[in-house]
Length: 215
Length: 215
Image 1 (cartoon, rainbow over the protein chains, first blue to last red):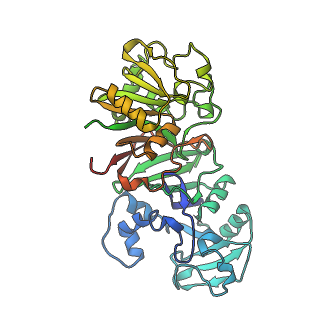
Image 2: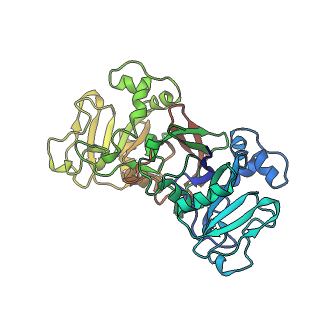
Image 3: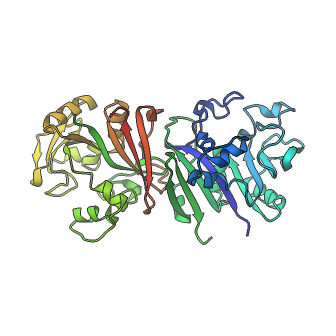
């Protein structure tokens, strides 16, 4: 049975999944790279950027789970580009000609456009759909593999609130952003439906995993 | 040099230090005992209630740091009693005749009253003071020992925001309260002034410690 998964979605200690003031120059607003720089400390994270070195511990183990077993991703419009990207017909995402997904990617947007096939197996599909509808489309495209909910925080929260997520890996980064988009709003008592585990890393971050009861 | 410390202040994963709907019957509102029940799993925590058994790992180690080296506590009115306690001249706190503090305790309130000496060395002093003024009074009473900021979340946040806290131990409990009083509001970039460490426990909670730079 394929799962719906969230992989290393990062939040600050005060629960923000992105900062304020998102723009082309600042994809995470005032958060800068603070939520994600831990990945570049790992061997797996560095390999994604053609670099050597890095750590091989628990952070690396979780980073390396990003791709295996995933057949499609769903992401929000706010992850695909800066505010207003839908007015630019040439915008193809932040990730250059060979994005790191290597699967179909379903972008939730109120401004659908034709699919874009990129190098390396990534195809962006643009759909105006509810979480359940999007998941059905992604499952169809995933060839029996798992579907990743890729973010941003609003989309992750919507899928969790709809009860669609089987496993999630949330990374709590020890910074206080103070403002931005909160991940946890409206999810009171979520822990009742999941087994929750926490693993602190020597790097300072904590990996919190939620596994749906009965899985 | 005596320190100003916070000991095992508990917050939910979504950052609430207490719930909604505080009352005599529900000191933490809808949170119930969820934020604090981990303490009763430890040997040290059980001893406080005259019970035996319990764990002896990292949770217990942190629980046992509650008293040693502390010469006084500062707490908010909301920790001392339920809403409206100041209208009851007989109210002496939640903790019975022998409270677990065993030091002077300064209760911040807009309704000061004469001090109350309890069994076991606890004396409650009621003062209407700023954080800095309260800390000066507590230091005078602490005989050269450290001062504990005891909560609730609003008071803890006020002392942190005023730059008065040297070391704090925050316990992140893997539940989502959804509502209540947030600890982290208004503390953007706090991590710049502290060394932050995270230690996950097999019990599921994470101990996050902040040690002021240069200490």
